[in-house]
Structures are given as structure tokens and as C-alpha cells.
Image (cartoon, rainbow, N blue to C red; front, side, top):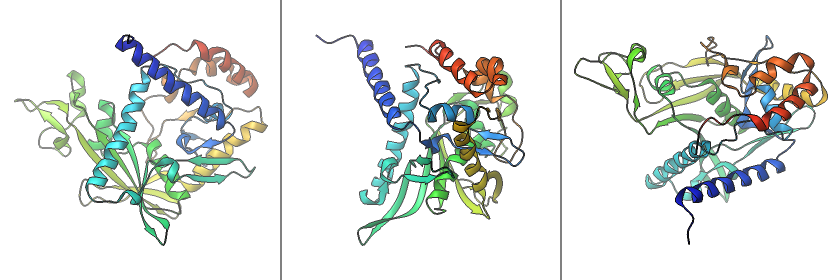
Length: 329
């Protein structure tokens, strides 16, 4: 007799989480490109919190362990599968597509520690039995109204997404890379939020639906893409879906990425905690909220960061099992 549908779903998610936990054990001591950040010349950390990256390096699970989050992660994986299916249908041969483990990056910090990563998709050609990369593609699924506004209407890709794609591009020999956003849902625009979206005759209106009064009702499904390029070690981007766009310089540099991972690596030999991350846009403008306000470990940092890394890590390990879930299942 079958279990209830809900029990089957819960059991399946538990299996996924167990597999992930087992995989993380094998990667302990390795820094991951998925946690890319920047260490700027003024000592600021931008992007992924260096403290959280250290916890992952040391095999300490301190994030959200909520079963309902697996649906979001699965949606991201399904989005990648859909893109690959489109490429195959468009005539790209199977051997012209490499994904994640098939085309990894790997490099070492000054101490010899490995930094590894797996790009979403790399397109290329097989020449004399060898796969030759031609273009990399990083894919992101749009899962909020405000992300839809930023990446489509304001034409500002997320800084953390640029950092990750830039990291892959750099370590694949400055491979030409693209960052693509897919929105597979309509997001309602209500009340005060309407003032943050374009009128019908303004740029970006094609990503919205309007009522008879010309008021924005919702964003509609879309894809938007950005081309990335290096200019003397500095990352630049421009839109691939809006014509005649100029290159925009960013705060993302090869040196800042490298120094970020050196910073995290140095934590293994030090009791000093790195600074909290600063919320900056890709162009360096300060964001309107603190990244820490969304972190389940904020109260641990508030209480323990002045006591050094060892005391902070111990507090994280004590607190992590009690982090309240953010969803329900």
C-alpha cells in the first residue's frame, strides 16, 4: 500500500538532503566558486559572506535546513534542463554541450588549498577528440518581483551572479561568458510598489502588463541576458536583449575574487573574523538594506563576533540546530 502523497514527497526530499549532506562531507576543506565574493581594496567584503564561506569550508552546516526550500532548488535545476533542451532542439549537438561536473574549474590559493566550481553550461566543439570551450552560460531563475524589476527593467544584473560567472570565465581562460535570467511566473505589482515600475510609454514596459488606467498590474514571464567581458582585469557587462547598449564597468575584478578566497583560506590559521558583507550593486552603489538582516546567524554575530573566530564558530554550532524554518511542508 502506498504512503500518502505528502509522505512520499517528504521522504523524497529527505533523500535529497541526505545525499547533499553526504556529498558535502567529501568536499570539506575545499573552497567553492558558488560562494564567490570580493575583497575590495578598502577591506570591504562584497558578495557571499566570508564567514559563511568559511563554515562551508570547515563542513559546518549553519544555513536554512527547511524541506520546502528544496522546491526552489529543484526549480533552478529544472530551468537549466529546459535551456539545454532548447539548445539541442536548436541543433547544437549533444557533444557540444558540457554541464557542471563535465567542465569543472579548479585552482589553488597561495597556501595550496583548492578552489573548485562547476559552470552551468559551456558550449563548444570537439576537435580531434578534445572538447574546445567557446562560450559559457550562467543561468539564474527569477523568483521575486524585485529581482524581475532589477534584472529586466532596470537592466542591472545582480552583483553576486556576475561574480560567480566572472569566476568561471576567468578560470576557463577568460572564456566569453553570458548571464541569463529566466522568469517563468507573473509577479503581481500592488499598491505602493507600482511607483517602482515604468509607465506604459517608458523603457522596460514590455516586461509588464497594465490595466485600462495604464497602471502596472504584474511583470510577465521573460528572459534577459548579459554579455560579460574582461577589460584589464575588470569585469564589464552589457545587455544582450536590449540593442545598442554600452559596456558597464563593475566592481568585480580578478584580484578582488582571488583575495576573497585568500581571506577565507587565512581564517583556518587565524582567530580573526572577516568583516560582515557590504550590500553593493555591481557598479558599487550602496544597497538599501543590510545583507545580514536576511541571515539566520545575525544574532550570533551580534553577540559573539567581538570574541574571535573560535567563540563565534562554537556559538554557530550551538545555534544552528535551532534556526527556525522559513517555510512549511
